[in-house]
Length: 353
Ligand SMILES: Cc1cc2nc3c(=O)[nH]c(=O)nc-3n(C[C@H](O)[C@H](O)[C@H](O)COP(=O)(O)O)c2cc1C
Image (cartoon, rainbow, N blue to C red):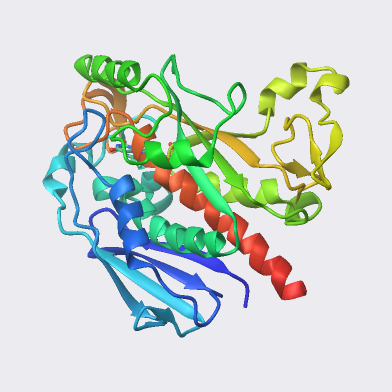
């Protein structure tokens, strides 16, 4: 059975959850690793975070016995314990610009409380599956790590300019803002946006180390396609690039090409502009990618909207709880999405062996 992850639930429903198909029977579930991942994704008392704190206790309702995978389908649930639907009463018919309110109203006939199934609350169960995939990859020598590479105009470290090690990525996960450089200036950027009742976006980079040559395949079966599919499922992701990404369009072939060399008897490349993928297949170099996250759509600043019942113009200032910058919390989510896609391709390749 193919490894597959399906997230369900909504912001103000009883729970959010995940159904994971095709995990190897006997795989041990590391509850501590899941809890750590959920804490990294969770709300905090930081300036960028929503005040909506949730306990995020994970309950495996199917497919796991005594901490071991025993079924073809694993189901994990997280209860929603801290909902405040009244916060959203003023947006019942007035959509928040750039959130999913307008499209859900047209498609489903209503604006869902707390963003419904478009809420980032659904990234919590995604992180349950991601933490499982990440631990399983680690067992096979593959490590995945993400970090904030910019917030607004403040740049942190980037694999495009700097040599970045797994050790420093792991160290930054213990900080409240998971970045490798300029954390203070980034925090200032968030505070300044918040003071203006506004929000700010940024970029997240992710690197996978220890990949074998050969995961993925051509065209739509490629590694980039699989990862981009998962990453675009994260609310607020508006761009994904691999390796040099859009910058490669301005390079000459002689610069863009990653020249082959032999190091310690192994073929590798001098540069890594391709981000560790050629023709959709991993080439043994670190897989590098960068994600653009939008500024949070919900902002307290007054904006133009329309009342969808009367079609009259109206002003909207969002009162509900929201993140003034989604980037720091999304780091764990990006890492999980990437781990899931790589694990999918790894299991696929091992089932063909
Ligand atoms: C971790 C995380 C937290 C988020 N928090 C909020 C929030 O508090 N308020 C909000 O309006 N959007 C938030 N978003 C983004 C919205 O969910 C997203 O912009 C919306 O669903 C529309 O999807 P789109 O931006 O991909 O088009 C968050 C996203 C992530 C990944």
